[in-house]
Length: 210
Image 1 (tube, rainbow, N blue to C red):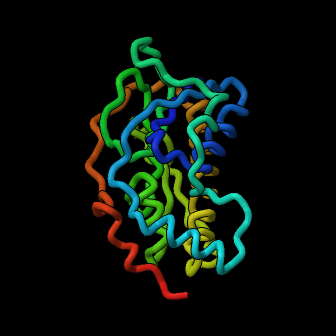
Image 2 (image 1 turned 180 degrees about the horizontal axis):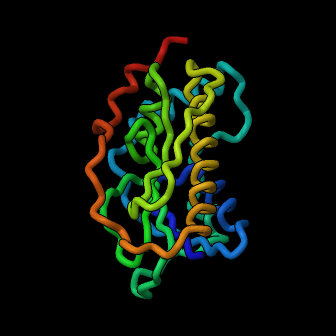
């Protein structure tokens, strides 16, 4: 199975690398990545908040949203747009919400119905119920969704670790389902409009007081 991850190489996070590595360990899976531009940009205050949390709470372990160099993806192949490679699955990790040529199906992780890292950030900041799901463009897989347990929503770094660890597990389950599914009969249907995050993810102002 050929899998392509759509990534913004200017803001590759550790969870992207964890996901790519986990997929490559699946038998018969060949992992590629393709550069895209993520929208909207994450707020500048995001990294400042996480730096302060590390100092206050002594968080020294690797975090899911830690920025990493795109060289961390070196073991995976950069998709050559001129090669016209057909992918069995494209994973939209930027919230592109557009058709992808050569894709049999597109899987998109959604956080309270919002795609991309901005969606994960908004969901972690929201004090209400949190739902993670994987949307299938072909609409042929059984819906996959979960409500991750949150160890401490007051600490943004820990909340994001919980959310994104759950997301990786859901995506792996979706890939397993794709492996067992019959060939897609209606590749990449028109993708429905979804909720989008506000520009700059203005909801950082909702961050609970510590």
